[in-house]
View 1 (spheres, rainbow, N blue to C red):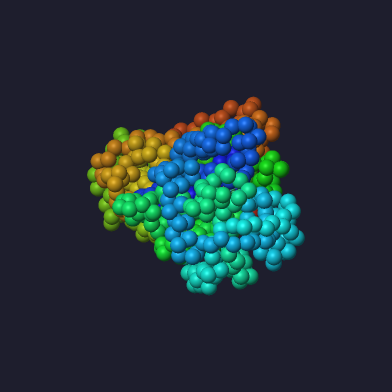
View 2 (view 1 turned 90 degrees about the horizontal axis):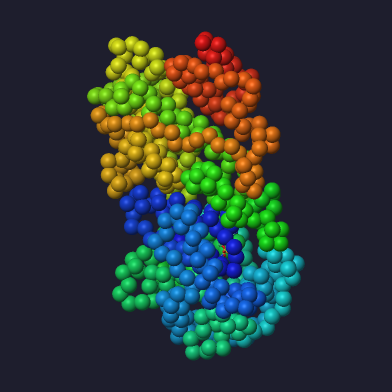
Length: 588
Ligand code: MSP
């Protein structure tokens, strides 16, 4: 079971929501490719004071507001092709009845009791703070900056204190429970201050699930919300087949809700005698121009902007940016349109797209698009290019990276293979071989090895670029059966001689967008992201013969890869490569 947090219906969808879902989606797709029976859950969190107030302001029932906003989230998930298996709403009857059943169980066991409480309350977060923590924050909400208020309430409490040592032990001894590892110390510090019992009911609003046996109280939104993970799969219902998905393999979210997921939630599960999720991953935040995105600053990368980016770069193109530049680990990430353009241009257009189009074009040109007999001859290894080992190593690294949710590392493994394919073409010169009838077998082998390496790269990238990879599969078969596991797809030798290949053009060159998602006019575009052909409008682009053009492309790719590895024009190797490129261009 893979989950996203359930999205709060009083908020408007933004990049944070789309990102959390995309990360979970990539993981879910990867796990399905491992032939795992995945249940991917998302949904909306619909109760609480703020929803009640927003509905009052609009003079509509809270349920109507929740219906409307939940639909917006459902549409966002669908339009972003988030492959969820279930969308739970906390107003669903299946949820409310089971929450009541769970709370009743806790009342019976004494883990929930009626008591009086006085403390510091963050109204925005609907959360109490200990005296130490409140003092540390200067009695102001660390999230909204607004002053905390002193509150006294008679409420139902959850006996969190009873689970203090067990939660502490969990965080201290199980390194894989909470990732990235930086989060552990933040939480442990707070746990070490001591865990007080937490109120789990409210009387100051009514828009919530009634407390069983005491309808004056509604169940506090966090307890209600956290329980979605188990109500969706019927953990409080008899004979529900979906119970097999518990415990969850991973809960994905951002860091500000790690306390609820890695401290409160395990304690609640311990009290309910249910197993704990294997992992809680709390990624960083998307920020904008170095500042937190917030309602007061009005600087969210909102749905309108997000849609402009994904329409322009394609859903996969934009997902690739989110996956490679997003705040997957402890650090926050800055959203920058220039980086979307750079990442798209460098990795997808110039590397993946260009290499795929060159190699498939050569196959069409030299072999009428049919991979020749014996081109898969394993004994033909060109010096420095033992492709089977190269791909095995990179494939294993990518799998390990997906497992750890190191999405950027997974893409890098694929990009390293592709950059090597470009170098291989430069060195083996298939365009030269094509002129020599005695080199037909070598030519076939070179092309086979390029295509096979590209096939494996595409299989690595599939969870991130599902549509593009499907498109590629139509021109270059990537697997024999849809049901083949990723492990099988990554084995060298998947393509067989006799396979028909057609020319592929996967990623078009695109104009850059500005921060609001508008297409930039030429004069505004940063030099690095301008299309080369547009650099000078007065010059007519020189047309070379296909052979020379291929050599120029390969030489360009070689120079790019040298620079990517840190070399500059001052390095003799780069200077030499640039000289060759100039000579090639001057040769016709
Ligand atoms: N409803 C609660 C979650 C309950 S789960 C039992 C909630 N909802 S939320 O809509 O406010 O946030 C949903 C997700 O978006 C959370 O993972 C949150 O951490 C994430 N993000 C919100 N803003 C974000 C960024 N700026 N950047 C990245 N993710 C962020 O919390």
